[in-house]
Image (tube, rainbow, N blue to C red; front, side, top):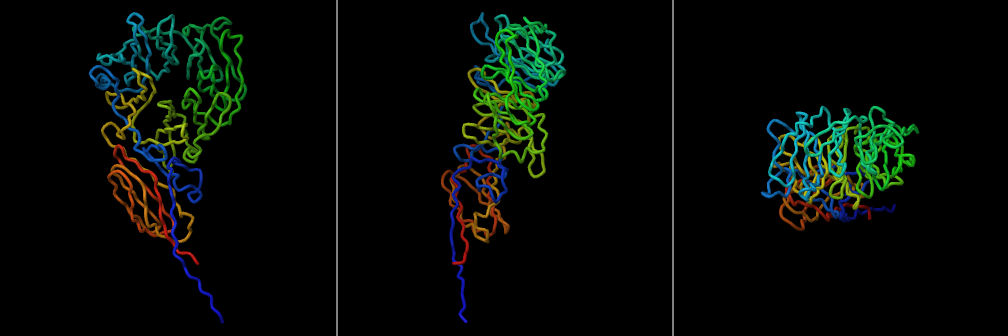
Length: 476
């Protein structure tokens, strides 16, 4: 009888991971996902396909004469909300902008940008809730308007005057009117008299309102975008043509997925609007909407993000929100760069509010934080003086070799101190990193499925152009 023999041949395989731009991605089962899609990733930016040290927070500053940080708030108060008052002083012939801060004692404190005067309490500005804020030029003078359920307060830099107005849940300026949504009459859009946001007397020649009873739900947020007022609602978007006389106003519904919109996450980039729903993230270009960042859907499912909010800063969309990872809720800030269609998550920031401003020739993302200072986003990965933990972990993969194998070698470029760890179902090995340039690490770990993780806490750290070499035996 003739016998047959099978000889196991040793084979090698190299997997190249040149692009880390996927970020955290929960769209597919690990075995179906690309290996460079992250199972988790925090505080590491995705830039040009590389993992790089992410953002941090430093004490806020402006380019003032002595080069110091923004002055401290008076002792005993902490910032809760930040506003920015854009004011041009016609007598002096220059801007005299002011940073306005609502503190936990209910009063507003102001600082005139570019001076060394410090924050001063504005005794006439006191609120029991967090007001909305908007800049407006009234009768040729720049004023700042605070809107609450108690009315509308106009502040001219010296005097604060209270006017009767509808309760407001959002406000925008369009065609020299204020357009506002109201919590008390949640399907009604109010608009002020033209050129006079203090006049809410309803008539065909002054102020007015529009009731929307078309089934799209309550009105959440009104924005002025691309020559129209857009009203984001519980389950849809309405476009309002609103120039000239109110008799000529015209409303039309916009086709959009009937997902529940979180109104405070609506942020306008100038070209497109992004917003979060209970179904995930969307974009809106003025005529249609569509999905973005689907890789986050799994982590957002079933999470109540009614307290989420967003701002547009430095060409990116920032959203403070919650995600659920492995059954645990986490507070994070999403940073989305639509030019590269990449996103990453920031965590371990302690703050109560942030706002994007253009001030003293610079764009800033300011944070209300504990203590007497304000914070601002920085390019160094520290929360004030504390280094942030930055981490990335791949999904589990068998490299299309379902049998036992050996991960022989990792090659990649990295900079700064850090740690790379390889895990399998048979064990793990960690390697300390330092210096800048190509790393070629002999791993020698056996297993069927593998994960690779990277961690660092130093500025300037990066990881790129990784390749994984495995060997295995197959029947010849």
